Image 1: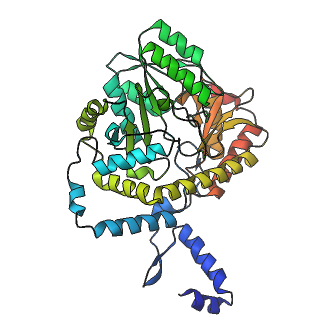
Image 2: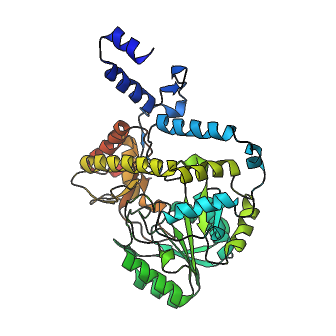
Image 3: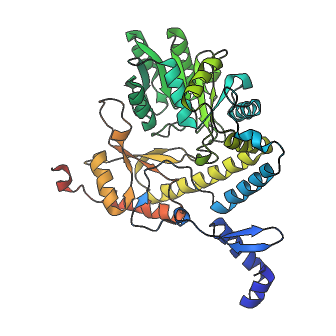
Length: 421
């Protein structure tokens, strides 16, 4: 019914009904169609608020901003695309490295993070993981040594195993990778490249200072070391240090994507290559997927050009901040590291907890978390910590339930039988 009709039926103001409709749309229950009215949506199973026994704090998804607003943006975008005369051109094979307009949009997105990017040095990939695959496969041969942070993104470990690349983990502090450890590893020789996540590091959540980034860049330059800078979270902090690529552009392969900031399912990522290196990387793109799907790249490019991407980013950032505030309240008195607009936190476990037994016991209480072992490079010692991801639960209520399960687990004692086989 119309807002006014329902207000009369219920004996409330039109404003009350409007707010109710907006909330229902935010939850994905309603959708408005101009000229036709408001309709109840069919809600898919994966859109239903998670009310089951277990809350997913293990998967590092961007926090939801409500299916309604995102669906409205997508519907408008697809409607505009459908009316274009050149629509079928987006179903053809893309040019090497992506269509020129998509590379230009990628360069503009990278420049949002304070790094100059020439479109001819930007390649469009099928997501950040694909960008990382291209960088590793181009720079390294089987058996080569890749340096990384001692605890790092698990997707890197999987790729290194797939490509038969050796990994060596280097120690971190609260400012990120320690320069003296990198210097020592370079002096030992054999390392071909360094992979790191300087902004909202996964899993620790740290942001490397600009001074530390300059040190890392100087060491890489002195030893001829290539740097793979994974900066998928770069735009989440409203202010952030300049990327390492700004201080070592001739040897840094800068990676970012739309997954963590816009929408994971679009599968669009970017590599900013050192000057002159783009053709070599483009060969890797062709050898793997031939290219990112032009149709989805066009959606992302349009959003970057018209400001939609900035609005979605702001909404993700606001929801992340709200969820971090919930975590601060629910986990008050515990020791953890997190960025105020990060999607995860790194919870340090008190004595006598170990990360794997804590994760198992938290799961029994209703919260799935990731133990430190998943992030450790090689056979290094695992910290007594777990990563909690705040974005996967579809509602804040569900998130709070998971956080309380974690807090209850911390308040208890390890089950003595958990360590026995």
